[in-house]
Image 1 (cartoon, protein in one colour):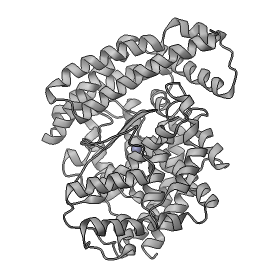
Image 2 (image 1 turned 120 degrees about the horizontal axis):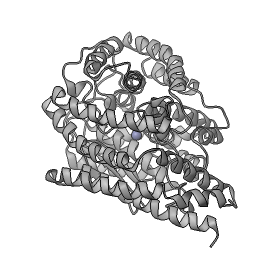
Image 3 (image 1 turned 30 degrees about the vertical axis):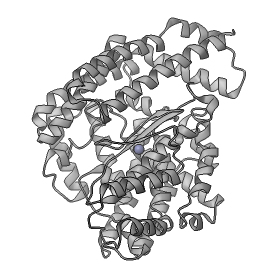
Image 4 (image 1 turned 90 degrees about the horizontal axis):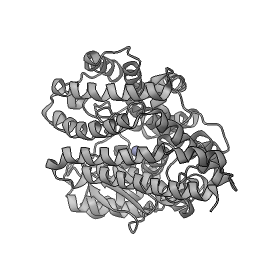
Length: 489
Ligand code: ZN
């Protein structure tokens, strides 16, 4: 065995254990008994200890020094393993395990606090999470920018300054579009009762149409839709509201975008450092383009309208054009996950500014709620009425995901770039979508992005796929074109 073989064999076991960790998380959010929460925290902390020991194993240092890559893929393997080794070694094992334990427990406490609207009761827990993540960020950055250190964990080679500049460029055009839409007649709303079994059956039908391989995946229900796993076990969840079917259908398409990315990575990369989506931003670009640029396109809405009528009978909106307007209805609302494409990035900008200020010590935890509510009123023109509609709505901060939110907007920006390139290559795509067939677009995404896994760094992955530099312009052009047409501006 060569050094490279030793290294890859060791890495394979680490990746497998990482997948086991992910499955514990999936279980926690789907079928775990409530009384198991504290025990699960201990279980995850124990496994995190094992993973951390493997990721910092001194043999890795030797192997990384001696291994000679024989291909572009092996070169990328070394780059990714080295990155993980360097990052992991900076964080003491005790701290990594403590973060795993505390964030696992705090997830359950957040869910209860949100239900009880008890923000004050949850703040001490959140304070503990923030303290631990700040300690980790200090260890990672060695006195550098704490926020950048955390952001880099989700979106390698991206900085807070770059995100800030990107948002400064995006904001004026988004706000101008939102103001113009406010002046237009509102879009119709889909109302009625939509039985759960029919919603789930249609969601599965659409998941299959979007290429989800159910022999290597499954769909369950959870409070929050998510996807989990990679390679040959990639699971998604959805949720059903009988008064509002679009949430179930579109969150399913969204999660199928994440899951499809994982399922479509080349089999040869499975259980290697290349065997997962390359960053959260690129991951989100896949879920967004499936959900929005394809799934919410007026063309696909034509087909979906027919399927909705088949399943649910006459709808409150009549005809595919009105249905497309209802699907793409723009309205100011509290909840990020329910936001339309025009408002979505404003939700992220708010979170980005606040979490960056928190990490930098410029904002005290006790002032966070007021800061959130003031900013929300200024950006959205509505007053937050309760914590579950404000800063308790998202699971991210309670589980320590600081630096994660901007990857959602990066995903939108990347999706905009991919959509422009894909549409240029597939001029008749809308004809297929109107028949409920996104396969040409899916094949394009698989070949250009998904199959490569972690072969190239995030930005390079997108630029390789599109042949153009990453820019927010295609997304903003797309938003103005689509919503301008839907609202007759
Ligand atoms: Zn997503």
